[in-house]
Image (cartoon, rainbow, N blue to C red; front, top):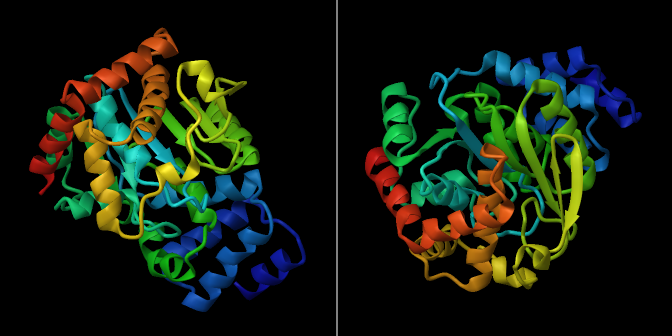
Amino acid sequence: MKNLLYKMVEHKSLSRDESHQVLLNIADGRYNDAQLSAFMTVYLMRSITLDELLGFRDAILERRNPVDFGDVKAIDIVGTGGDGKNTFNISTASCFVVAGTGRKVVKHGNYGASSISGASNVLEQHGVKFTADMNRLDRSLSDSGVCYLHAPFFSPALKSVGPVRKALGVRTFFNMLGPLVNPFMPRYQLLGVYNLKLLRLYSYIAQHEGIDCTVVHSLDGYDEISLTSPFKVCSTGEEILLKPEDLGFETVEQNSLSGGETVEEAAAIFDRVLAGNATKAQTDCVVANSAFAIRTLEPGISIENAIKEARESIESGAALGSFRKFVELNS
């Protein structure tokens, strides 16, 4: 590790093989917390390279506990996190909205490291108990439309760095890795990123790996379609810039998407969204992200009709029904 740190401090990047090996060493617990902290902090000072990101991804997928749902058509809806915005759980809420339309979601997530409430936090707050049991996971996907893969149960490297990430409290390259290492390896993905460079990097990886991925980024720094500013959408190599008004939404204030100061506050907002009694800004944000997830799964659907489906999922109670069934099956 010492030699690698010297190399990186000198602004040199790691090869794909070097990145692969260092992640295997992390998974095997070969570094102490101080070494891990130093290594992760480097990526706050410079951008990750494609070879580094792919090497890290190779190692995590090599050591993962694989998940097999056969040929089920399912999407992962996920953000990198690390945008510093402390929003409520927009991606997680969108999973149940999409499931409420009759589609399937296999979400890979974790506790919040640089935010108050990650996906695992908000689900655990509702009494969800995470599992790696395939029978339970399969039933959850079949009966509620959503299966949740708690990252530490499936990726040893993600488990081993959890305490250090939480202690650092800032984004690390593990934020960038999370969306790339879903152990199910779904063919479809809606992915939010916190800057334009990552949008193009992930889009390139998705095309290279044959993933039908829509990558989104709001220009004021959100790793999702926040409706607080114009936003970029990149899919199958096409990158477009949209304003909320282009899709019939209003531009909203950043503070309207806050997740609050505690997991309990974030969970309460999450509940109100699915119950259909959240603020217009909160609901519209979830509807917008859900619509692009629907369109990723079904490219033939217009974005206007996808928005209509997402809104109907909430207003009809289908999204809330999916969530209640999910909690029942996973508690």
